[in-house]
Length: 335
Image (cartoon, rainbow, N blue to C red; front, top):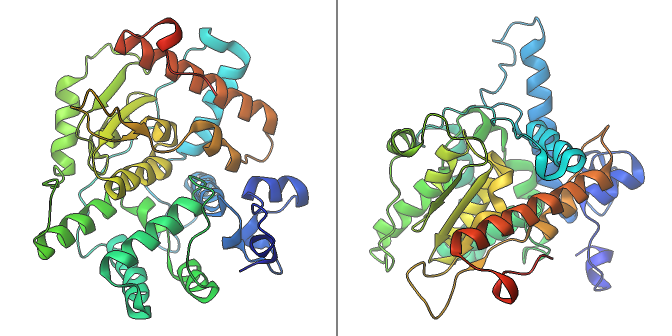
């Protein structure tokens, strides 16, 4: 554990470190190590997107270092936040960069890379399901989704840091966690919520069917049986308002992770609970106000971005309350 965890103080976020030192946490020369900073993985991922976007514009042989097909959605999101901050409710949101999401396969590099991480944790005594839950904890902390420090040794975290490669997700945009979950549930013959993800190519077709040709980027989409978020990934090509409810917490966390990586504007729309229940309403998995802590975009005014995220969150809550017909004192509070 680092000194920050030993003293009980919350660790610095990756954005706080960057603002304080002018460096990304991956360039941190001494302890605490990069994985000690909340949001370090999201900071790395946004940097990778920007780097590959520049590679596409450079005249170099693609065989040496082919750019990811996944576009720079992080910069798109930052641009929409700045527009929200300046123009407020009158802002005209641009369409998100299109992503041709694929089905994950057991032979793709992203799947193999995740399994390598899970196998290491399982070998170290965490068991199959324990390994998956610890790995999700590690991803959620690294992506800035939670402030809960992973319950893993520093050696285990260093192994994951040196082994896990989010770049594979960019070369094949897909729901890799969903494939692993479905395999494990079917092999263990214990699937109480009957989880089986819809193939990604069908989700893409379904979205084309339900989306009106003239629908604006502010058109909202909601999946009451979210799973790991494949329908929202398909919808992320056309809107910034994504909502879904999933009964099983770990599967809902996978959906939130997919949103953070592929469509960060959809994180606040992931709920956990029973979408058919009137007595126990679903709860939001991750709060926009917390998620904004990691955000760091060089060359942009940090406070403006954070304030713009609050504007987006307020608009999102207003839209949810309007869709539910909730007004006055019963409306969801704005943090």
